[in-house]
Length: 477
Image (cartoon, rainbow, N blue to C red):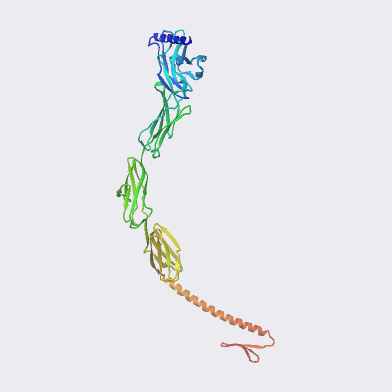
């Protein structure tokens, strides 16, 4: 009986709604709406009713699920239990807006929904021809990122991220992986969907090339989805670098390689210090390099700009070469000073060879590939010394004549004469002192003896002591 009454009621409502003019009783409701599980869904709804020239103030809007279950009513006691507290009428019935919001969407909420309007002291109608179907999904749609295919380094660009959702009152939150200026807006779409757009204004750099640009949408349910776009950034050559063998022996060949970081790829040229173009391409080969080979540099060029390496000097290894400027000389009132100038790579070690011994250098001064070895001190009076230089590539020896200053010879002779004189004087003084000491000892011993009476006689040739009996006890003849 209850089923029959419900069917009869629906039949009568249908007749009454259809009996009215289509231009009078109608509604605009989408045929289908998709909602995210756990989120909300909004069913857009507009209705119309025939005008009777009166102003109606009391409206009652009712939403049904499956044509029988009341899911929304202003009298909450009439709402079935599983929808209580979950439905809200967003629209204003006085303005013919019947938009419905369902919160905390469940999979069991999937089904058909219809709207009924009751106008006090006028009429009522159920819009059976405007049934909307709600479907529930577990995963949100992926955001869509839009950005230029090719970006220019240091030029501002705008990227957009778009995501669809069904809950206009609680939209997802969009975030970017790149810093920049953000703007956003939300617009309604068909079938109860909304489109949220976030715009990111940023300035890309070369570090952004081939790096991912991420846009993430986080929903109120805690679900999060992310989309990625790989950035392609054009930038001029950077970090132009020349590489070669660590060291090259003189008179051998060497190959240089030029590289850089750039997009698009760069072309290369090899330039001398005077600006002449030596070769083109990333590789340059030099034959029979020498210690005099000049430094060169590499330039890299692409559509975005140009850059160059620092001047590259080849590390050429060669044996010692002792310069003719090496010399030895003496200075007045000072020792001999010898200087040995050695050109070599790597730097050399030097030994000083005298007539009978080896001397260490007093000081070493490095000036590029030239090394100045200095020997200073009293070496005697050699006519020449030798400077012997050696490194990993070979060795070299040179004999350096010692040039004495004229004054130093005179000083040496005078010094020798003075020394000889001092030696002679010292010997004589020592001898006289010894003799006198002996005489004093004898005199002292005998004059104090009462048994002895002595007479002292001295002349230019003789010195003697005699007793009274004229018997000498000491004589120096």
